Image (tube, rainbow, N blue to C red):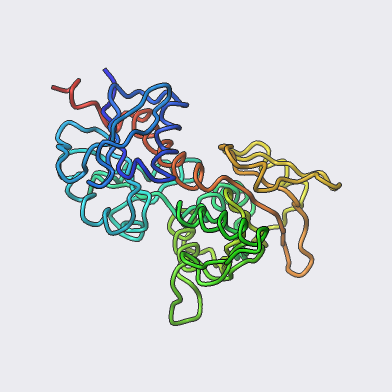
Length: 344
């Protein structure tokens, strides 16, 4: 008998993607339930070739749910994840609410799948920030080979990372530019169409933004606390897929050719790196794909044992929904959970 899976935030960008990926990957679920706030009650969402009616989170009984994929924002997660976990469901949370809790594992399955067993403390597993997820997938095999000391990363993050309203704003502003209409700023502090904004999340006292802080702290928790990382996170007028320009300093010597071969055989990575026009990946090409793509691998002569590279991934998939489903698969494949109905 299969599992009962609930998707909270099923009407949002990531929630819909979670439902698509559960169906695509034929996750062993006997029942999938779509949940959202009361205002979405009765709305319909797609699940494979079926349509699910959205149910109300507030009144739903989680007592027979095995896995809950949570993608309804930090405030909802803080309120509901502990309650759902207390009823015996394992919550895989896409928000930042529990990422920094020492009793909650922060998981990217290609990187630190063994840490997933720590979920039993709170019945909650955290998904990392979308920009961190793709970064650590590429860093992990290189860290194993040559020990990373320091990472400098500049991100080029798509508007879908800020939700459907942000995608609508880019579309509306782009149309306004072409039709000589009024360019209205709602979601973003400055115009995003034909522009970029070096500001994601709130500013902190040291001048870094919360998004930049997240990348630093999460990389340390997932990969290695000894790694030093500094980030500049930038929102760009792209609908889907985050890109990152990354400079890495290693303890041991590693050449670009060695890195290329290591990454070619690494889980979740695809190397597209021809030194010619078009011999690299762009966000448009990565959209809708599961892999983390690595291009422009070259040696950085400004530091000892340095490499530079370009990393691109679909932020709605590997950066959020796919990673959550992979965590659920990890729980099932490692026999860390059993279906409640079967157990009964």
